Image 1 (tube, each protein chain N blue to C red):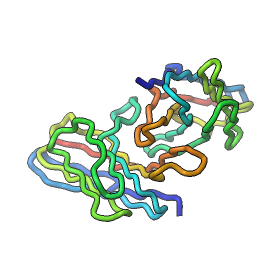
Image 2: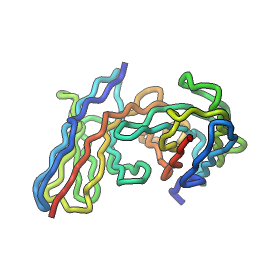
Image 3: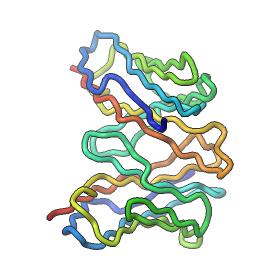
Image 4: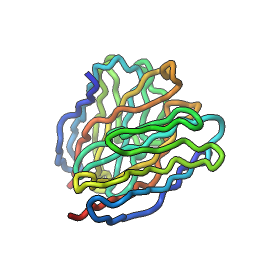
Length: 117
Length: 112
């Protein structure tokens, strides 16, 4: 299984709502990532988890709260978002540490299209 | 710091034309290099990769060679199809393997 799955595919929420994005992989990867992608832009790294511990937080506002309950699951909890947070949210995973070839290929999910009203 | 520069699109080609998308990079050490493709409304898919100098990555008719002397990783395909229409991202991963640096993306449109 070389797939990263994300739910929901689309999400519309108001600025006072609380919602969660979910990501799952069964490749045995121990590094998992959240990216934000605005239209016509490359993905921007938000968070990195390594062995279920938060490794990197790219100065993301606290209205985004990541969680890694186990080695296969990654959540992103959303609260009090702003309209400018509307974007495609991508989850990815990779080996950690890198494989014998030394590469660090990330496998991406299809993303959640988030609209904040 | 690390950076990736790729040609800004859009690139419009007729079906069966030859494709080149240029990509150059700046990095310390010995990065791995990737091309990702994003079809409309979807996530990113790894198209090909190369992990050391002179390696050639290839997949689905696409090729790219890791050129350390010119710090380049240009994407080529001999004959594009309409189904190749997508956004192509050049990327590098280095040392701190948890961070991948992406280029701005090049939109390719292939017309029949």
